[in-house]
Length: 231
Image (cartoon, rainbow, N blue to C red; front, side, top):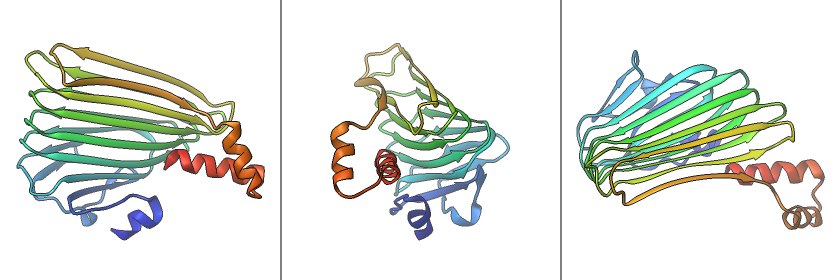
């Protein structure tokens, strides 16, 4: 799994893994005994509490409409998702998480570079008390790109002490890049936390001047600031 670090800067750790590259499930790189993946319906189901965390790794270039449904059905389970994607053609990525396992947590990080038109929709639905769903989406948008980020957090009735956080971060690599962010919450029980964050990042003069004083040119400064944002 070292190539994930070398090529995509994704840290691996002791876990049961499911690896997707360019939107395709890589069975030979995956090692899961407590998870069922239905490739026809694009459903990942955790069916037995694992001793190790579940690590979903989603990397590469995407195009067209892609759905990923993650269903956590077991107690005391931690599911981590690391996603680093790019798109050079229009792409729609939909990630829907259902958590029905008490004391179970989903922690997802999506990092995308958009060169065309990209829409990412994330939805976290709490279907049991004491569940956590955290989804962070970060987009670096390039010249003439259009980005739409939609996030839905759902805490149903009688689902007490749930922890929800769906956040967006955006940086424009060019002034022609456009962004729309739509955060939505449906809260019907008293949560432990229910947070939405949406932020637009822009480098400041102090950062730029510091890097230029180090002898870097304008293109190098721009590249370093973009890499810092993605990291």
